[in-house]
Amino acid sequence: MLSRWVAGGRLAHAYLFCGPPGMGKLGAARELAKLLNCERSAPGAFCGCCPSCLRIDRGNHPEVRVVAAEGATTKLGQVREVCRELHLRPAFGHRRVYILEDADRLTTEAANALLAVLEEPPGHAVLVLLASHAQALLPTIVSRCQTLSFRPWPQESLARLLEAEDGAAPGPARLAAALAQGNPGLARSRLADDQLGAGREQAERMLERLLEDPEGTGAHILAGDLEAYTRDRAGTLAFLDVLLLYLRDFLTLKVAGRPELLINQDRAGWIGARVAELSPDQLLDALGAAAFVRDAVRQNAHRRMCLDLLVLRLTRGRRRGRICPGL
Image 1 (cartoon, rainbow, N blue to C red):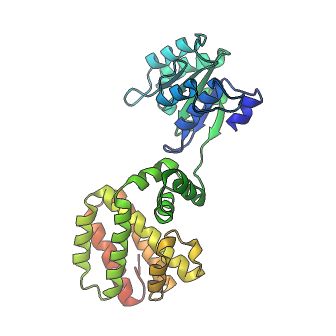
Image 2: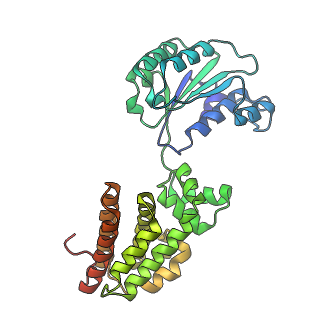
Image 3: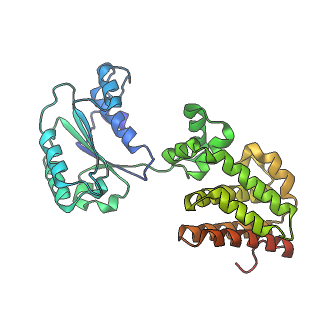
């Protein structure tokens, strides 16, 4: 879209890139700077290897600057400096491009100063605002910017991207894409986490032990093992996310009978060999129990008590034919 606008001469003086962290807003802003300052390509394209493109990648291009918040907010002095420099004509490129990170964290004074330059923008400069929450910006600022919303990727597309660009195996790529809910930055973070594979193995071991112990005689030991494995609140939440996806796959295969719909497709054989022992009602209740416990952990409930509750709900449901009756 940005390439078409630049090639067609429809460049705006200010853009607002809005979306959650990890969606690639800063990368897109840098690519816009390359579109405007590439030394070799035609308008609407960039080569990625000329001195200008390389300097933008390295962060030392004299006409392209990224301004980050100082502490919790972006302050008046930072915005005044940006406004002053934007009016200087470019000496080493075609356009001055200033990228303002965390634009939704502007102080009131800084926002008003920014509004002044947006009302009378210099023709040789482009300002790109990056924000997670557009509603935190002044409506007058939003109205003077061309807004691009960065939305989550379809999980299949993101998994293919992780395989192609990050060299991920299909199984971990699909799992990371699902855990990140279509957010490329979070997916790459999950993929780089050494605990991703270990989390899958631990979830499988837990489900194996539950299936082998329908009376729940080892429930307290299993909860203790999970407490030691997950270590802290963040680790517990990460484990519960993986467990929920496994339970989702169990239910999907049980009801639809289509392995191609599984997130953990590389474990379709393992899932298929065990799903026959469970009913759809049991699996629905298991999902409810795991989601309930995850929410409790997020609200800072006692971690060991939450894991005890999870195991007890699951084993009690196995004895009575339902995973978590009365949840």
